[in-house]
Structure formats: C-alpha cells, structure tokens
Length: 444
Ligand code: AMP
Image (cartoon, rainbow, N blue to C red; front, side, top):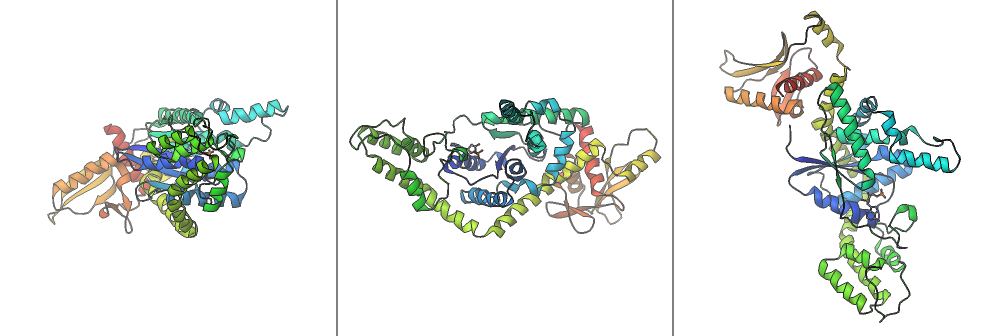
C-alpha cells in the first residue's frame, strides 16, 4: 500500500454561503483535524452533488468560489491536504457508473433522502416519484464513488449520513466480490461532540430557517445581526439563565473555558442584554476578523483559487484516480483489444502468464531490469550502478504498483522525479498498470 496513513475524506456541498454554524460545526473542526500527522486528508467541493439541489448556474459557481475561499481563509493548506473540486476528477462519474452497475436498486429505494421525497409526495396525494430526479435517487452511488475512488478509511459525517457510508461499503464489497479486491471499505466517523449552533431565532442556525449569520459578513453587518438575536425581556440587573440563552451558546462556541465561566457569572449577576451582545460581538469578531481579511483577499482573485483547485485535482488524478480507474477498467473487461489478440495467439483459453521482473547485467557493466509478460517486454529500465539499486526499484514497483510512476519525456517513466524505465515499443501505459496490479494480486 502506498501510504500507511489513515485517509479521511470530507465533502462540502457547494450550495450556499457558509454561516457561523458551518464554521463551528464543520470548517473549524475539520481544519484542526487536517493538521494531524497520521492522516492523509481529502477535502472536496461537491459540485456534482450541488446540481441535485441547485439548478441556478450562477449560484453554483458563486457558491463554489465562496466555499473554496472560506476553507482556504480558515487555514486549509492545499500543500498539506488534497483540496479539489469534484467535477475536476472525471474518474468520479466514471466510477459512479461502474458502481451503479453493481448497486442494488432496492438499496437505493431505501435511501433516506429519496424515501423522504416519496413520503412528501404521498402526503400530498401525488405520484410516488413526482418531481424526483434520477440524480437524487443516484446520489448515494455518486457519494460511494467519491469515497471509494480514494480508498478512504474514514468519512466524518453526521448521523443522518451513516446510511450512505453503509451503502458505499455495500457497493464496494459487491464490486470486490465480482472483480477482485480493489476497494477499502470505508467507515463512518460520527461527530458526537460538535455543538449545534443556534441561529438568530434560537432554532438551529440553518439556511432553511433564514436565521443565519454569514461567516464573512462585514463587521457592521455582524454587529447588527448579533444585536438582532432574540432574547427574553429581563432587564439589566435581573439574573439570567445562561444555558437557555442563544447569546450564551453562541459565546461558548467561540470563547475559552475561562471566558465562558466569566460570562456565566455575568449572566447570574444580571448583565444587560446589550452588554452581553456587545461582548459576544467582540469575541466572534476577534476570531473572524483576520480570517475575513484573508477571505476578502482570496475572493478578489478567483483565478488563483481556480488554479489551486485544478492543481489539486491534477496531482490527485495522477497519484490515485487515473491508475485506479485503469485497473478497474481492466478488471471489468473494458480492455485493450490488441492485448486480447496477443492472449489468444499465446494459447486460447490458457490463463495469461503472470508478468515478471527480469534483472540482468549488460556489456556496459551496468545493471538493468525488464518487466515482461510471457515473451512480451512491457518496460525496459535505464542502467543502474548496482544490482541493489535496480532491486530496490523493482521492490517498490511491486509494493506500490503503478501509482509511483509519473510520465516523463516521451515513453519514459519516473519515480521520485528520476526517469527509471521506458515503455517498450507499442506498449500502452494501461498495460503496465494492469501487469503491476496482477503481479501484486498474485503476490498477495
Ligand atoms: P449544511 O450546508 O446545512 O448541510 O451544513 C454543512 C455542515 O455544517 C453540516 O454537516 C454540519 O456539520 C455543519 N452545520 C450546519 N449548521 C450547523 C449548526 N447550526 N451548528 C453546527 N454545525 C452546523
């Protein structure tokens, strides 16, 4: 396996403007988690998912920009984590189809989002499927592709999403059963301890209730919104119940333990609502102001964000997505036809010979290796000073597969920036990918 780290994957639907609830409940904890040493984190803008809910092109675009800028402003470092846009990875819809062809329709019938839509239709006396798109129905398959493509181990989700992770496991398992072990089965990482932030009216802060404080509202708007938070009518001097107050709950989400204890005392001592709101405003603004400044600088340069996202997707495809899809295509039978002809020539129904590495020394005194499949040479190495050097590269190719190879000039392939071997004449990269995959399978 290329990496021993735990791979953690988080999708962010690009269907709106982030608010303080998203910041406290999702962005802030996820960025803190992304700094852990033993994880490889994947954060992606789920814009294909957004199309299920939002059919206003300008809004999809605007929201993608705002959400990307928000995560970057809050400290997500694209040099440390994989940060990309779903629609920049064509292997995701391709895998969606491969999975759709093993996914049970009956399982999809039971998905919460789809069932809820059917229930609403029934309650209104409509046809079961009135107004329901195939996109909504297929959503769990797309989500499974997002996860399985990168063989993510853990997916942090709320309780309502557990079912979708179970479906991803189910589809992955069915695929593995039919076509060989290609997928890690992901696990849901349930976020129990993240607080739910109340909105201006005391209900959960949510776009659907129209009670949100936008994360990067200008300072004056932030102040105005905080002063509009609903409170009871207790006068200054009257003791107030901290736990039942939205002002207090919001304060707690931003303050240290000592600050929270001091505020609790101030409530008991009868702080006036105006003063409590002013303290809340200053506390939130102290945390948000530097991020807001970065956000404004980022959003003013959308071309830079575009470049960051494309660069993330390009590297990620090269590292994981493209080699995996090549193996999967091979596994399901979407194969190079010339290769099939070679197999037939070499012995009808006989099983294909296992690929092998051959090491040897040339007259120039240097050490070489080849990857062969029967008579056919797939890869021819450069010359190395020692047999050990050649042997170590072979061991790495066996262990890590084609994922370590990068395309160099013409037919050359590089490992860690060094060109180590070339494709033999008439050999396509996908043949090498599949030969290494079969070798790894056989050795396992
Ligand atoms: P949404 O865009 O509403 O799906 O929210 C995206 C994520 O933000 C959710 O999965 C939660 O983790 C988080 N979130 C949304 N609203 C709140 C809230 N009021 N309090 C805490 N977390 C929230």
